[in-house]
Length: 366
Image 1 (cartoon, rainbow, N blue to C red):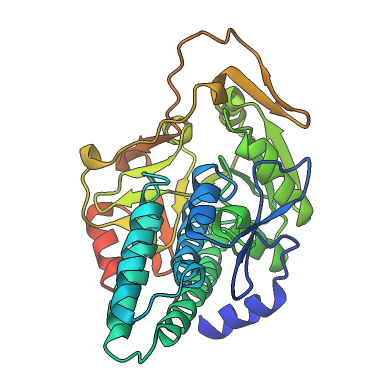
Image 2: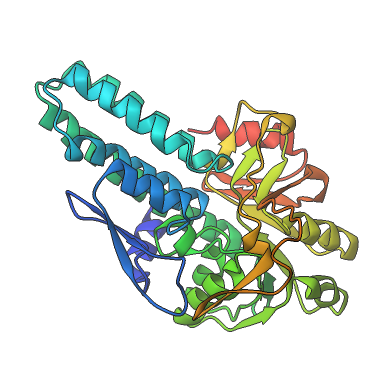
């Protein structure tokens, strides 16, 4: 598979670059204002990175992890500690700050732990803080490259499941905007199938309340020449009933070893309906998204501002569509039990049922 991965990496040229590292700063595509305006912001400090993640200028589990990794590098750019031991203390503080930005996406904590552990490893050989910083920069770039390689492999596995003329239903944005690479997880099979000559189209639910489907997925797919239809979230059932969908492919913010999937709110609805109508439901995520330690009851589901539900986003800003004082429950993720998941596609292969056994087998692959 490796030669094919290299070939696709050379051929795939995304029009959007969500994350770009420039040595002393991180340049991020501001996803809060898409598709109305294409604007980039610069993060030069740990707090800049934390704000970008917390405020969803950058979003999507893999992209959050990559951004956080570079945030750890910026901790040593922002301040130059006097020695490597002071540098470790600086990195520990940065890890603490960044870990509090988004509680559900496991890639965030995976990337922070990997960067800090790498720093500890480097201190045994690094003769200076600059050498430590250079080593961490290489590690962050490696995380980015590994993510892109993983997405290409997921795309190849997923493309095998797509027939010429298929229509894919997704949710939220699990494309290149969400991963930082331009390729994505749930969109990778679509792009690669298209590269291989298959005609594949997409139905994208709007994904209220933040409208990632309407604002981001539609924008991204159309930018890359994929035929796309936008629907209201509430139309998903009818779309499946009328057999307008051949397969469902979604991303994930966290996957447990027993097969429970945490993803954008509304994923559970799609999974249950797909199960009812006999439509395959696949989850695509790198193995870094698999949480090997937590149980379902351990995972905190993030709740965000009530005004995200009370309002709708427009090019002119947010507009209230209900009473300002109405009580709101705004969980931004839900959990899909394994019984509704046909398979989980990773860079190491496809885990099918029993997921609790086959996910472990995938993780043990070298």
